[in-house]
Length: 260
Image (cartoon, rainbow, N blue to C red; front, side):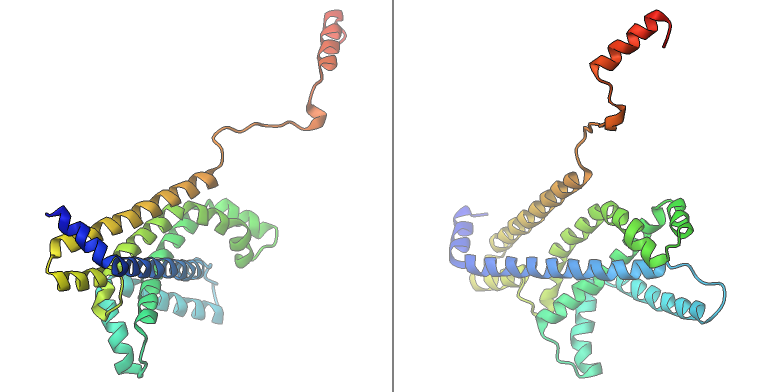
């Protein structure tokens, strides 16, 4: 490995690397946010209690079957294959000429949503059932229970898994080069094709990927610590329960006299 070549490659192609890294972060951030929303909605729907009889039971079961198929398909197939099928298949099957960036955002979002839905569902199931029963006892329906009691706890609990999905998306955007999305891997491949220094070019890309994932990980760890709060808590008693020095002296005096 020649460090002179690395310096030369960076100095001559830093704009391409920067554009690629920016596109990678953009797709990862938007895809993770949309995927989180999809996963949250799917996870909540899949935890709705099934009615014993009626049309609602049929609708809910049919919805759960459709959502289960969606989850299994996108969790059971590689993203690179999904990219090819969705981008080229949308034009053949539906006559929709998808923009590459739009296709990339859609692919990352629905793929992330499939994984996040199971993470959310697991987070909801982990909440003690007594909280559901207490909410129903005071007249809350399922949506009110989720919004006011369950989801705030679930979102905090699944934050590490959500951050992990974000980091995975930063790396997995590299597969989108198969549909010519100009993310970091695509730009690096173009640079290496121009100078024929493949090792040095992809070494630079490796460093950039590491910087992005390391920075994101540190930011997420900071947010987790902030949400956890301080490790030391000062308990303040009710003002009526606070004893003044005069009260303590009076109690001792009465105790000595046998009157307290």
